[in-house]
Length: 232
Image (cartoon, one colour):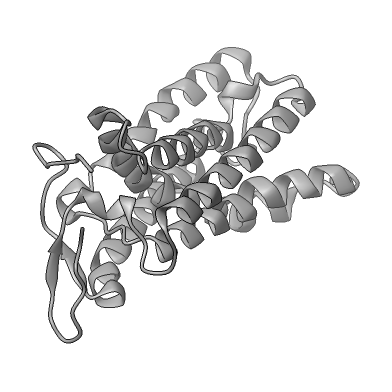
């Protein structure tokens, strides 16, 4: 377990995701299980309400699945019977999910939501958008805050895993001549500016979190998840 001492820095390993200064593991597991149930609910709603474009072609939905995987694995990781690779996966998923959810929320509310045509946003659709582009990020931030989790600076490459979404989007957009996102057509400069800004926001978010975490939690994450003793 990580020990916190006022006025000094103590190294923290990926085991930090298994503990909290504010609650017992039982309550932390209950919180994460509740978040997983909320994610399941939003995924089911989004899947049943999706329009002509397949569910899996939206980056928001990619992240919904990753978010669900994080809360499920991080909940399971709190129990001693949990396999080591689940605990490793939970830590890495956390480093992927938070920066990319910040990016998706920022890009949605700045570059997509303001340009939705009048009359399209029913109360139900607005609820879905707030849940997908607000509440989920809030849950991830609360989880990060109440747990002892810290990002490892050397893991800055993990958030870039969502770059695999770009060729998927491009293939569908260019072959069907239908933009999944209106701002992303892959036929003009604005599309590539949008993508560049999105990547920059994600990486900047990771760097800021990894830099601020030790100051906020009076610890520093220096140990790689690989080779770490993740038994409890």
